[in-house]
Length: 163
Length: 163
DNA sequence: CGAATACCTAAGTAAATTAGTCAACTATAT
DNA sequence: ATATAGTTGACTAATTTACTTAGGTATTCG
Image 1 (tube, protein in one colour):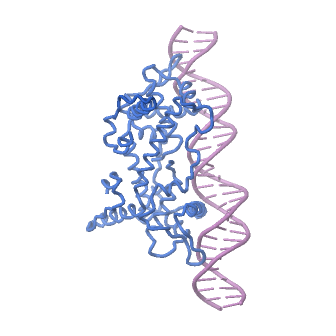
Image 2 (tube, each protein chain N blue to C red; image 1 turned 60 degrees about the vertical axis):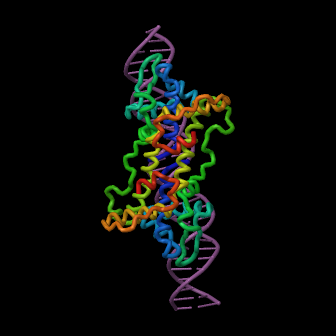
Image 3 (cartoon, chains in turn yellow, cyan, green, purple; image 1 turned 180 degrees about the vertical axis):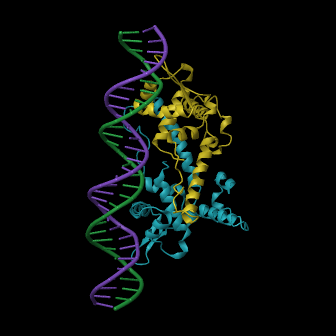
């Protein structure tokens, strides 16, 4: 599990898609403008997102990208994984460095920590974040009528508690 | 909050320190060998860790680094922060791009997510991980007598449940 | 056709990592 | 005391990897 700007951009872009899903396909040019991400970079990110079956594309004028499956079934962990596609992760694969020594122990501990964060992000869907943005928008208007708490955040106590 | 290999190296090294704290100061050369991290890189990382008051140094023969304060009071988040020293984090500081538009919204959402992970890692101390490694070592020996659950993991349900 | 768009490949820039040098400090041996 | 060796501390440079930008080709719609 790696958490870099690349993943942030991917999540941001996917969130933009989720926020505009009622407008049909969303062009990368639109996302580029709204989210201040270069078009070229978006293209590269979406190539990976498409390979990961998270989005589908429509070519030609009026085309763009759409979420594949609802925003409730797309989780942050999937997005981050799709653009990072880390195949190595643990250093000790074939090398003779790591024959059950302490190196493997610390590697294991980090991997485990990483896995826990992964589990955490597996519990948060795009829909959760959209709902949260609704809460924020409403609270900013001082018109706090609906307090939306997504049912998909159930296994994520931290998110729920911060809403 | 950024989670990269740099942070992993730092945590790994600090863990090594924690695992050998009864031997007096630990030299970077030892850590370099055990954890397969280049000595130069360790020096750079420990310069930051020292600046962050997470370790103290002893020069001369037999010298090395020691944890400053017990492993119970050093948390993963501190280590990652010390070596990353991310000052920018949000893109929209002075630029006119981000006047309350959607850009700021998605930035906000990511920052919030990031903050939650930070909170999570603030709840995990080096001692927690060491305890966990004890559990693993014991379970590997199929001699599971002591099941150590650190009291410092209390606010981290995920870690506790995975032990 | 021509414009809007996805899709692809390469090049450039920034950051992480490794490598190396030299100085300062301190325990130990001489 | 003095030398010697192990060690941190503070740099600079080279290399590798991650990120960003640039330019092109293919597809679809009006």
